[in-house]
Length: 411
Image (cartoon, rainbow, N blue to C red; front, side, top):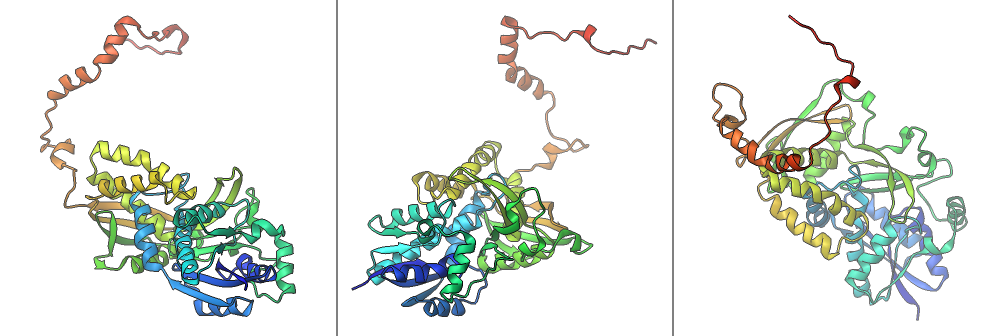
């Protein structure tokens, strides 16, 4: 009796080739495709898996779970790896791993497989997430093991009559879900050259965008985006609509030479119109509603949250603890933010909140100023007391005026 292996299947080059490769090694391959909002023909992908050798082919609609349990926590954390990448692919891997484990249990399989390379981040994300769910499962990573170059892999696919979405002339590796689209390979690998326009699919080139800004209002409740221009929408639909609107205005094109977990630098091209727009708006709202101490603490922890997610540690106690903090920290992130989308940029034009901490009578310099300026003298004296005390013991060096070019005028 053959062993069964559950393969995370996307219909792309690597996983399509993996099916006959695994079958040649004596496995019954069960394909699992997760619908995470890529707007692909999933029925065709399901049928393709069977055509190239899978014994069964699952398709799971996981869009809502992806949005609620992965995208939303990352948005509350304003999670951007290295300050740029909204983690679109990184967030999807632990969810796919969870589904792999569930199907493995249903099929009573002892093996699961993915199509990750040996020098990418996704292998870590899958392997670690699978181990967190069920450490007894054995992970097979064909691309890590077979040693094919990209051209050899394409040749293998052609020899086995496996239809693939790439060619030697357009060898991009594409990953798409609700939170973003990524492309790598081919001409993208040369960081000295502009990204070819054919690498983009979701965003209009800024120079071809509309001549006037598109203005939208985004409503939030406790850090959760709930409306566009006053219309309440389910989270999945809101993100999908924003991807279209912001993408038409060139928003979300990201060209990043990032530091991979395995220690190499890789040029990645991302399109994340909704993610960039929502994170920009969410940060603007936080400026209005968070106390200074909470804001500064939260903003200092956000890079760490993004690193943990990027590095495949979604199920780690550290990320789970940070998620709990982010949820509490954003409980007052309620209000509306107006942004202008224009030629690749997101510009915040206004924000309002029923729990705003912005007090006009304290901030103004006009006639309605209620701030007690005289009280500031005592505050400044006490705040600077440690500095003055130290200066008596160890005064700083004085400026040498003779070394400066000084012009003096007398009356």
